[in-house]
Length: 144
Image (cartoon, rainbow, N blue to C red; front, side, top):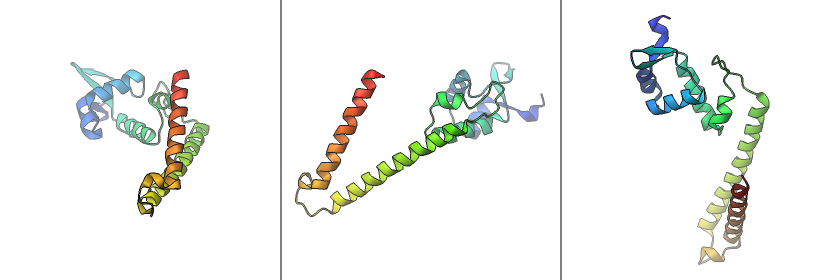
């Protein structure tokens, strides 16, 4: 393979900002693969930069590393399940609504005329919702 199409792990780390340990971990998970070695140094095809950019985008969108691993074939080609993208987009919509409600509640409490925020009915409602959410999360983690 031409040296112009090869890149060392150190160069990958420099171009992506990822530590070498993360690059090796991603290789271990099958997200990327090296094309060989030069001495003791791992060598990758230059397309690994694009693959790592896709991994970063998927992580930012909330995909797990396992979900991302299923997006890459053994040859490194991207095979994205469109229904999975829709599912993740729907989940993001739900989170956006939750964050908007939380933002609105916090703004209300900040401007609330009650002397003590704990006396504010809207703040009490936020606290109750947070407690229920935490309780449900704890129950789910016990059964997972």
